[in-house]
Image 1 (cartoon, rainbow, N blue to C red):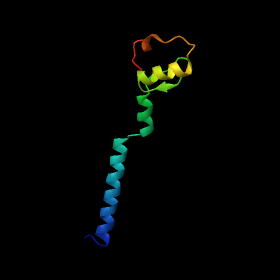
Image 2: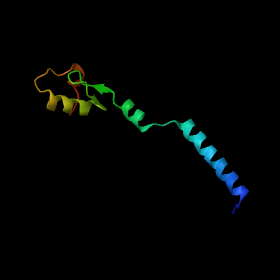
Image 3: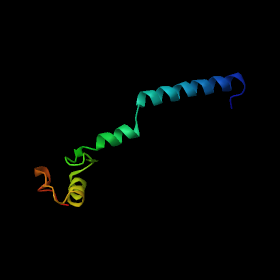
Image 4: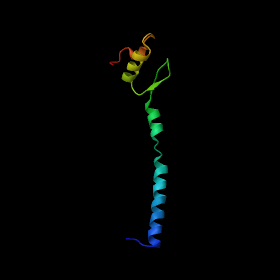
Length: 76
């Protein structure tokens, strides 16, 4: 085990390495989730991740509105 000065140096080196790795990775869950929302409802501007969810949303929230052409052939 490292003791004294060697231990402090090791901790500083590890902290620097962790900071560089975190900065390099740059992964943000919020940004990734936002990127996954690719379908946008034309009526209420709500975003959905896939066409199946989009069609279910449209049928339940906007039953009187005409179905968008991209959702006509989607299996819900």
